Image (cartoon, rainbow, N blue to C red; front, side, top):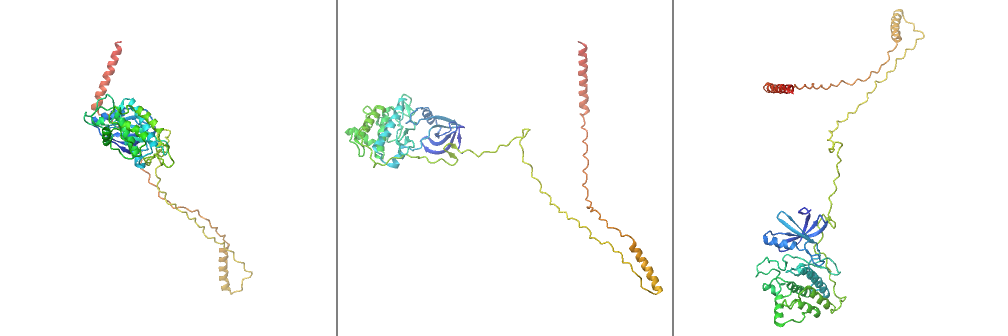
Length: 429
């Protein structure tokens, strides 16, 4: 985003430069539209006075580009006007060279119309030239020009900001009386309009000094090459060196131009159409036809019931590794002892051997006759884990001591005195 001037105008990119300031494309945040902003670069008293004069000019006309508003921020000042994107007549001549006569008549008619509105306000422009005549973007349609740059204009009767012998304006577009130090007047602007007309028809800047000398020595010359005779008669009436022989008003010159157009040849299909296209260029990134691109929305945070905002939960410590429990295998099954089969008839043995055998047999039978003890499965007992140590009991904080005696006794005496005085006052009622 660009710099915001005076909290309203957002300067985007420079589109031109003049003698006392730079012209920026800006976004008017209040009116929501693009404007041209002329920022003053110098801050001396002379320049500021010219700035005040220019920004105070308010002329509402379709062919006049006058200041619309102004603003100041610290030591900088600017004024704004409509944004005109088609360049100037100098750009058109640079693209196409000499222009068709009927196209030139349309431009001169609009220029004289705007100049008539300026003169009706009592203002002398004093700097009419192709670079100060801007063009709207109209493509190959009917052109639309606007007279701009009133930096050195002045109202008739206002005090001059320059010395009497000092000429203000653009060399090559001065009227002869301006070079002689005469007071600015409307016919001087009309002389400059005639020079602009020759510039459009010939595609190059005319030699005003040589033209004036020829007029003074030989009178009105014949029509130059490429200039139709009816149109030349109008231009010659604008270029007379004597202001008394010149057209006195822009309205009178415009009427003569209307009559001359009727005698011009019709436009042929062989003539190349003149296209007025955008000379400023596209908007920089971040800007669109409707203004600066909106920033991505930030999700709102809802407050809790107490008015505070929810905070993200603290990070959890990593969980301890899980211990897998191995199931305890039961002890193997032991089959119960089977009783020995009974002997049908003991074998015949000798007496000694028989007695020993009888004793042994009886012992064995006694052992087998005892009932077997069943196997009892004992429950699994987990190993004892050490119990965590019990934290020591928190010590009860000691009772806060009272004030020292040196403070407590005087305070107590004062309180007792106040109490006694109060009782005494009650007894006096």
